[in-house]
Image (cartoon, rainbow, N blue to C red; front, side):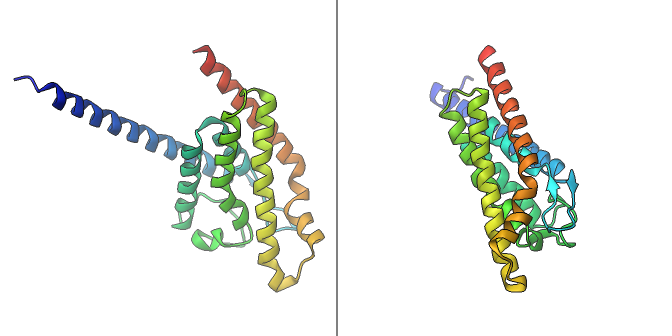
Length: 201
């Protein structure tokens, strides 16, 4: 016996929503794995508690490849994974793990990730999606990450060491600028390349 057209439509709509939810969940999972893998490409620096990592590159790329909501959700999920103790954050932050790592000296960078990724996605989708705009969008998101990280580190260290603004800048921003420039350019290249492939298809 055939189902009535209205029931068939409702079934198809429900199936489509389920498929979309599974797809979105898969994208979020792959995105968090990508960020975690980049986090473990880490080089500690003796003069700052902030290591050199590829994490920001992953955030920039996801911001350029995903929509604002999906980018935000992916990075928020990543933080949740780290907060419950999964080994997704960069190693070597004074032996911290889980929520302690998230609230440690590098917490400002981490907590900026969802907003930075969403900001990049918004700017990118309002542009012509070419390399130059990719640089602008990625640079804006990266600047947000660095600024938030520096402010957090200043607050985190103030009670213990009363670090000056110049000291915090030297520890939280200055050493990372050359590497961040390379990450911005590489992410913009990925975003522009993906955009060209989508247009071609």
